[in-house]
Every structure is written in C-alpha cells, then in structure tokens.
Length: 364
Image (tube, rainbow, N blue to C red; front, top):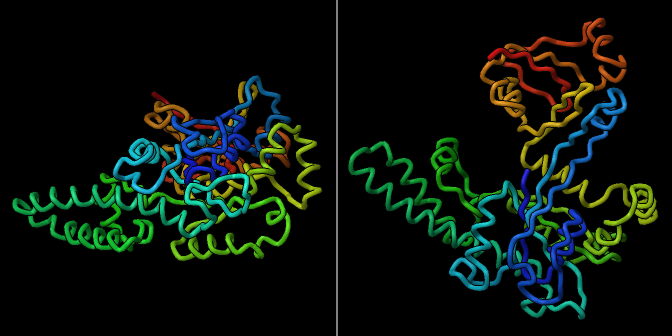
C-alpha cells in the first residue's frame, strides 16, 4: 500500500510524515520546504504475526509494509505549472490513496500560505488542481473517442460517459463523486484520474482540541461535512503529539498515549483506515525459516494470493493448505491442527480470508 501525503504548504504535512516514518524529511516554517518527494516505509503492526513468531522462533520475521510518500506542497495554479505543480501532480499518480493533511489549528507563529485558517478553502484549492488536471485528460480522451466512433459506433456509450464526466468536473466536483457504472469504470481504467483516488482527510488538530472534545472544533466539523458529502474518510490527528512520541520506546509510547486518553498512535490508525479504504487484508505464512504477512485485496483467490509470493506459485498452483489463525494458536502447532481436522485443502476458487495461515502446494 502506497499513501501519498498532500496538503498546502505549512499545514503540518512534513511534520506528520516525519513523525509517522522517522524518515527525517526536512520540516520548516516556509512554503515549499518539501521540493523533492520524501519516501518512508513502515512496518504494519500485526499481533497475529508476533504470536506466530513466538510459536516458530523463525530465522526471519517479515511484516507487511506501508509506503508513505510526502509530496511537495502546492498552491493555486499547480495544474498550470505554478509553484511545483506539475511535479506534485505526477507524484500523486503513483500512489494508491491520498492522505490530505488539512490544517485545523490556529497558531500565529506558523504562517499559512493564504494568511488564514480555512479548511474548506484549503481542501477546495487542492481538489480544484486535481480536477483541472483530470479535465485536461478527459478532454483529450473525448477527442480520441470521437475519432474512434467514425469507424465503430460501439464507442458511443463511452463518449456519452466521458462527456457527462467532463460536465461533472467542470462543475467543480471530483471524479470520486461521479456515478460510474461498471462499464464506465472499465473504460476509464486507461485514463487514471487524480480526483478519483480514495482520500483520507487527516484533520491536523491542536493538542488541546485533539485530546478534548474534537467536536468543539469548528474546523474539524467542516472537514467532516466535506468528507461525508463525497464519501471520504476523516482521521483526526495531532502532528505535534505524533512528533513527541515518534522517538519513544513502545512502553513509553503506550504510557504517554494512555495518559492522554488515547488507545493507539496515529500511524496505527492511518494503517487501519488505509486498509479499509482500499479493501486490503493480510494472509500469513509461517515456519522455522520465516514468519511473514502478505497484503492482498479482499476477494483475492488462492492462486493469485500464491502469486504474491512468487509467480511460479500461481502458475503451478495445486492447492492451498489453510488453517484459521485462532485455530492454529489454540492447537499450538500445525500438526495438532491437522489431527483435529482444522487444516483445510482449498482449490483454485477459494477466496482468501483475513488472517488465513497458508501453505501453498505447487508444481512447475
């Protein structure tokens, strides 16, 4: 999973990125501090994997990973090349989902590129640049489709969809809110749209608002209203707190969060929201050589899951020996689980389940 962190200059984006990844991206109180994108890779916490490591004492322990990309800030006119606009837009194309950091705190010591705190304006600024970029792509696609229709009328429905999409974008609405049908989604696959990417709005609150009643924050409620209207997700977060706990030991971090009345760090919550938003889950492989988590999309069948490990596994797939994680833990080992009939032999049509512990049988 690759998440791109975007936001206007000085909203706390790079501070949050550093706190979540410990990647050491430069963070300062001036616009365009981030010029080149910064990349940080973090392990996905999974207590199931920790338990399997206790059981097998493997030579290698490999959790699933999440890649954060801290993308350069932008200003109005980015779609036309203002600021670092074109580079910003190119970097967004590479990510699976967008974490849009929105400033919801007041601080006279931290300048805002537009001179005041207004989440609605900030969100619209970035959305508009994505929409304008998409509009340009859709217009080019319409021109190509019109030429194709001259030789084949089957493209008529596609043209009508594209023209409706163009009108939708011209009204200032993102592609996320366009009512695509299945044929439309299939047709648009070859024209990846920036404003169609799933969004997590990271509402960056002050420590006081975050640890108190966040609903008292007018700025936070504004972000929630916008997200609800377009079917996106809001994650309240405090970059300042995340920065404070980033260098702490797990024990100190847990104690600090508990004192603030918090159960989990921002990183864990972003991972959970990201997995849900993108429809992801993990299956597990376990043995003395390695205990490992593998990220797949929900609905993935066994052969394709095997292909995540190695393409030969998918090509030569015979069957998957599957046991439920809880059953394996309760039995103590795979042999005991087999004796109790809890290890199933599944074929090519088996749909993988979150937390399956699997041994793939294959022949190449």
